[in-house]
Image (cartoon, rainbow, N blue to C red; front, side):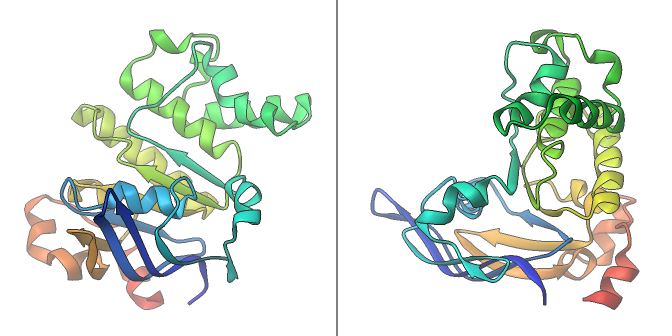
Length: 246
């Protein structure tokens, strides 16, 4: 299995309490994996550790087969992007919010404008380019946050329950759009959620976390059972293809 990100015997202690302990974890290059579990399971802490924003208490992390070391943290973080539940936008326009990372990375102005325009179009917020962040709806703000991450062209995208605060129609529309984007770009993605109904929009692959452990992983219909999907009238995208490629 060609993994862009691997963890071995990774664990995190905080105040003497074990937050998670994961023996083996792998994010397949170009794949999307949903990490699901109840609140307090350790999902966000694991995501932050994998995104190199939290230092583990022990274990090994590999990025594209090479060990993550303190000296590589900054360069590796620049190859990742994270989207949180709260958009955390700057008090400026949508266009400038999306371009801020490109400016920090000193991307030439012409290229930055082109990439920003592209992702505003992809996420259907081009008409909001000059609107200030404080005047956006929840869905518009989260679309801006996603565009800000994707414009960086990350190798790994981390999504930490970015749809949890959205109403049902807004959430479903954004999930549909993001699912198409992830299939098109094939950016390796870890998607954390506590709501299994969101998963089929983005992937057929899931891992279940409970009390700091990954207790099960596999195809969505294997993990949750076909009955759950029928009851919710959900059909995982590419489930048959995922089974063939598993």
